[in-house]
Image 1 (tube, helix red, strand yellow):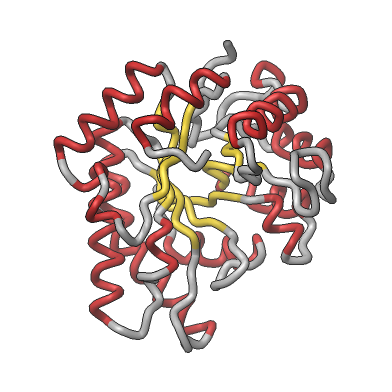
Image 2 (image 1 turned 45 degrees about the vertical axis):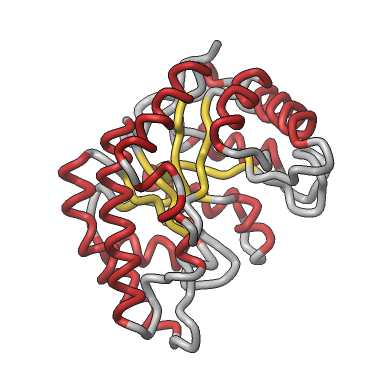
Length: 267
């Protein structure tokens, strides 16, 4: 949406969104996320707008990866993860995005093991706080397929470490999103919506109907977070993409029962 947080909540509520996902970037120490006063502001923005804080994204992991060769960087990533778990509990957020980012010049297997170790070290705190660490399949890193993502999640072995599945990323990486959704099944806690090759949802190469059906078949009823182009008019683009998504995936048609349920009821 390309808006500061205090403007973001009322604008997306005006468009008709139920929630927002905030990016916790490398400058996280300068944001409202890190102080009690700042988090109270976020809570007020959410309450006053009627728009929930659906999740947050640890975008900072692209600069401070849990797989980094420098132990001090890994320590910062772990501390940020633990703080995010506690902050999510404070703000009533059920899960957050952790992109499975690479460490510079780190071999694949070493990177995988570091992610298992670092997220595994945070899993108990996540369990105690009722928060899901949702690992995303991203274009660089160690989870470029559902198979690799599932391998990390299974190795950690915690109910509080799950998948943040992005069908668009799956397609762009040469995988079959429908098959990947079925493979991950109940391990999907949150999901992205994007359509590679198109400006708006429905204009690209993604089999949207097949993806929606796969999500229904596994009983997914969590958040669907738009990760689509802002364009020159973010509000207009957001409204158009939201309308497409709602038309394709009405919440009342989706089976309930996901252990990671965070969706709001239909309006």
